[in-house]
Length: 424
Image (cartoon, rainbow, N blue to C red; front, side):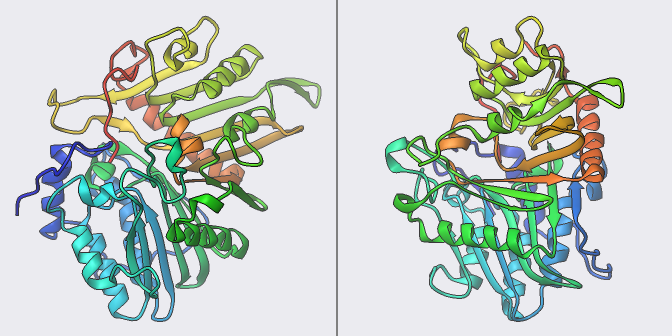
């Protein structure tokens, strides 16, 4: 089998992903035969690209488990930017065979970026491509998200979420991830996923959003959010001509109080950001302002932008700015292989938020802190108000920070966005 690129990829993976995909296609992937199903409980799943194969594929394995658990008559819905994993595609096909309704929406580049990659043909054969049927695999338009306005320029369906109507002992299960289903997403990129079961309101909000993606009715799309404590889900794009234009992330950060007193003790709010791409100037400026206001702001990122005084790299590196570590490492000095990066997109706040002290809150999803993620792309963002889950993310953040190369020596073309870092 020979995979070749059909056109220049929009953030497509490099040769390593293609070669690794061959291994997956040959069946050299983690299987679940003989393993007990994982209990479906709320909380995060993290991969470790520097660890064992099992640690690298932790998110993939969890999804394979849930696909395998799905009983006849239940449904699986997934919206994913890139799916280049024949084993996972076959698991979805097998689910359809046993009577599960399987619906998948992909960015068009998931098919066109690599000629001959087998995942889409497996899905198309098993599920069909008729979006009016109970099962299907669908594509957003070429160079466009399903809900982005054409007059706004190129956009993508950048989502990475999975919905399971029924699993063993759980229903209405949402899995919101930062991970594409590709070899590099497992073995090269730091990613996370959050499992949210038994919440009908959030599940329904995601399912309704999925239906909007299927309908591709961009003209009537409006940015929406749904709250079901302790969760809140946000669905993008949020174009400037929406009735409520604005920046979701800066609005969140506006609720942070940096220096406060609790029980007679002076305290400081901690803000941690693990982010693949941080190129939205308003967000960079707000993070700097929080640091100067007395917050402890700590950022691990893979790409900013540069080239002028208004670049996010320059803004973040100004005197008095936050602690910064870049994770964008071409560890094998081979431009044809994917760099090691942090691919997650999470924000962690520990301290005083929205007027209440001793908060531990996280936001995670597919939403990079970039302009297109806000106004053009199909994206989802999930807020979780949980001390334990926040602390689990802090542990993952510290692990990525410790592994980050070049780290603080981030005056490099890759970290400054002067060379493109592929996202696959």
